[in-house]
Length: 322
Image 1 (cartoon, rainbow, N blue to C red):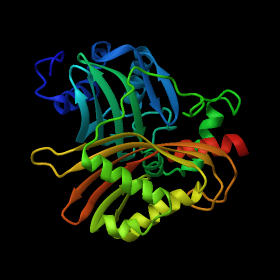
Image 2 (cartoon, rainbow, N blue to C red):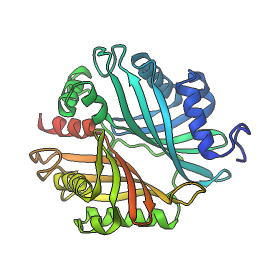
Image 3 (cartoon, rainbow, N blue to C red):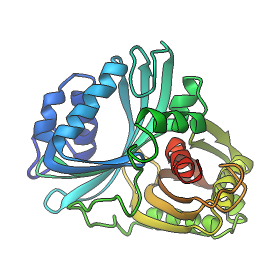
């Protein structure tokens, strides 16, 4: 770990360790050390530039959810300490909605939801990030439909003309990381599976997925076996049948005491032109950023975790359709 604090034994230990230090140990000031001053943080909801804005957003979240925990489930990574490393960090978060904030008036409800974050780090510092929270799971547990949440958020942000614009190729900002991951066979295999499924080859699912697979999908949905996998990917692709599917980053890993696994960051960009997960087609142009993890076993893909932000998809649709 050349260039990194020696208290971290490896890169996953660094990523999990600083996450706990910042959020649960209240070391928010350590962001001055661990995040670069001009970091670019992309979430489906917005693009945030600069460490000071990251600190402000962190404090706002903790003010609303003061008991929030971030449990690191896995870190799938590529690169070297000398050239920089990219971590795809999967977290299970718990929190109680104790105070008013971006999610509205305090409800006292206890939440459980997943997050996937891709972070580039070099010299003990993160300088580029892609962050997706399962907003659909969060708002549903608060008793709100994702479409209704998006509509209310537009109003609370001042209306369609001035509200925060979601991430898209037009609003994205370049950061220092230009890598594409690695060429490990498991990343390539998962990329091939998703490319085939997004190309309407749904017959790939019973061939490539373990019949007893366990899947975690947006909205806090847990599923098992081929039917649940088919329903999820079919419903997504059917909403955007003409959209361009692109894999932006691909990592595969073989690690001791872990199954072979893969992390992909991908996107769908195009018109909401079909009936599917997002209801009646509207013709709205949508950019969907997704991150997914997969674990493989002797009978194929046995665990899959997929996150995108449903509320931001609805926000894009509503901003164009009223």
